[in-house]
Image 1 (tube, rainbow, N blue to C red):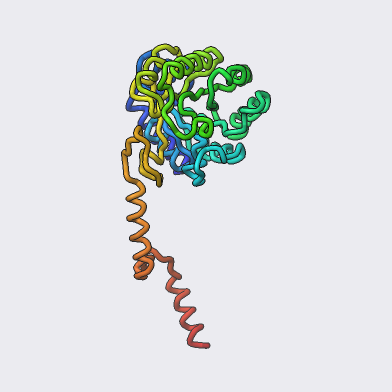
Image 2: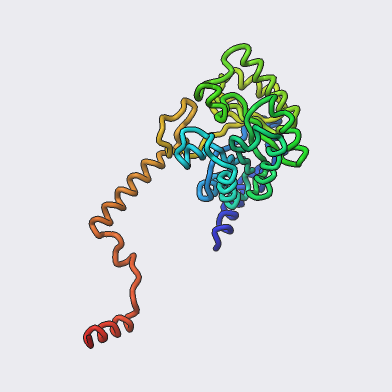
Length: 303
């Protein structure tokens, strides 16, 4: 059985247990989940193996986030990752997914300076990497760009609140929307993105009360991260919820497993076994046939 067949069968088995789950997640399906008040489940993942597990678990959406600059490459923020790197990671995730919707982050510098270049880079994500949608940060200032992407048949997810690509302007990773002026600005931005054609908006790092208001006002789904439980869906970075990062977790992160602890223990045992010469064992080794061993013995005696 091939790896692809195995993955597809696992997804099919799970979908078969719930008649309401589609074989493939689409943007209209996500919109309908908001209408039915059924939460959207999403996670940020960056590689084939992780994305395959996410897909088999039945989540709705996988985001290849520019946060890979920090999680996968060790940078201090998201600004360093390039278009070519984002395309590379997105292609790997694409090969893993059978059901979940694939969204790719537009990296810093790929759309901020020129709308025409932004559309061209969005096309690359769809054409070269197999993304089904792109995500970009910003509010009213992105309205024309979003329209042009949508006109080019590229679905767009917005991102408001704590926008990591604006880390220098914000003076760090700080909760946004804490004053009446900021609240009004964010609501205006949300309406602008919806009117421009975004199919959903990520709300990050804002008070729960504000996220609830925005979620109720918009017709399109909101997906929260550090925005409270009243959004239409939630997203976390896979490495955060599995305790596979090396920094203090944000307040909103819930760790569902200690994968790092399991890996450290396994690697320590492996090191000990190698040093004690108990790995590999004879049973874990390949052997010559008895005839070949006899020939080698005769050859050794003749020497």
